[in-house]
Image 1: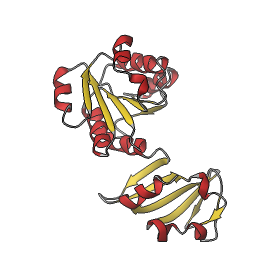
Image 2: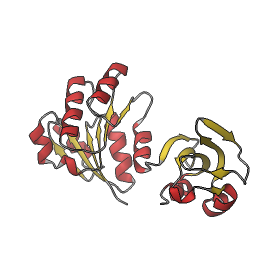
Image 3: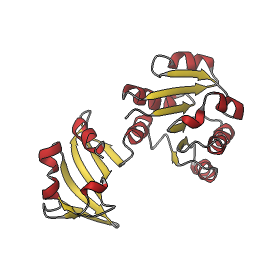
Image 4: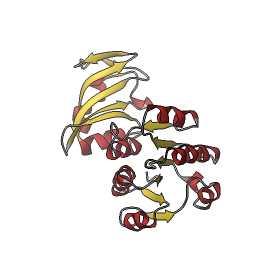
Length: 217
């Protein structure tokens, strides 16, 4: 299902997130105070506006509270970053992801309401976009352009069933290489291993096959 994302701050990090989300068929709004960056971004987003995210009226005017997720990717202006997150939460934005420049900045962003704090050196834009597109994917490792290992929170419909019952290799062409349950990890689980509520599957497969599985309700 198509979602609406707003990316505030179109530097290198914000650019990579916005582009990845747009290429995945999502609606993406780019927001920045820099007119030149907004002009450049128009080719890889749905909409692009010049706005100051530290001004409440500017955020209201673009209907920011209607977006499913807002990514605050502001560059080196820590004060603007913190104020933007604070305003977004006060305006009722349900899901805010914010870029932090260091651990202290990250702590403050969490305190003012950020739902997820990412560090560009550790969490590249494409990685964040991937997690946004598949919220039940808790983590992933890209092995190549086509293959990945993903940690996937299973849907309720799969609980209390064995791996044999699920038969994921036949149905989705993916392999379960481990199960994480209550801080315990079962490596190379047997086909008779039962999946409990809250378990996380660590699976390997082609990205297209993985996408079909993670979008399963």
